[in-house]
Length: 134
Length: 157
Image (tube, rainbow over all chains, first blue to last red; front, side, top):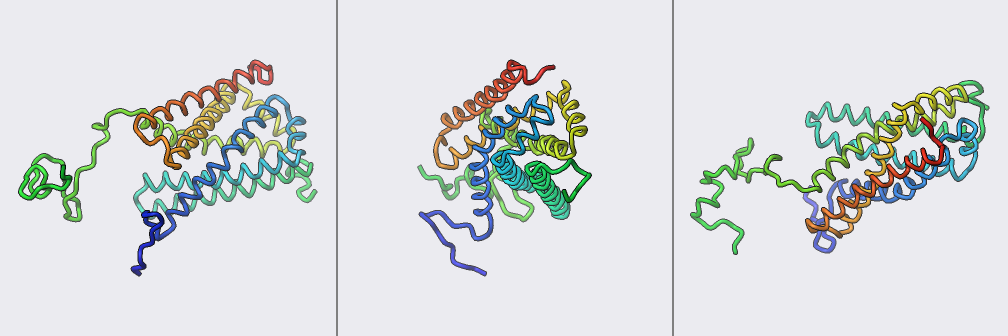
């Protein structure tokens, strides 16, 4: 499996998935910069606004879409970051795999439930758990 | 100045070195000894790095509180009032402030890393300068945000 090493501008090109992970980490950080500033602004508008104020905020499609994007991209970013931490400190392969699977499952759960909540709030659905189909 | 050891120079020959700068690895190979944590000279970039990872971990926990807020909104007025009540207590506000500070520092440290990744600010002096900038900017963002929240009366204790 000795494929010839490839070089771009005298820098060796990653043979496996390391370079992809590196790029994904930077790309997600870059996108999260404006989203974090928007999040700060949103926290400012929702603070002290109460339940009705929060509902009004969710009804705006711009807010709902940006919150959904922030949720998904931060969970992606968090999953990559936690994986790096686990890789750094957990050396026993079986423990590492177990932890990474648990973290991945939790991230998927948070992402799916989060999108579900945001869509319902944006559409003005009835409060959960009543009227799940409403 | 040659960087490779001269033949017969005991002080630079890993196989005969007596100074402890080389160790025999478990696989039998002789390798230079890594510097231990205690002998690194202090640089502010060390704290920048440690605090950034700490902030990342804190944000992972903190994101659960933001998620709970989202869930409370979806669960209706009673759940929302209960959660807002708890998170409006001194302990809850402390948690929100911690999340703000961790997010602000992770943001400024992340920008610092992107600057470094672009190949800028990598001399020791510039790296330390960028680290101080990221500390101060994060503190200003987080403290300023909360002064504004209390000052505008949006949040009262």
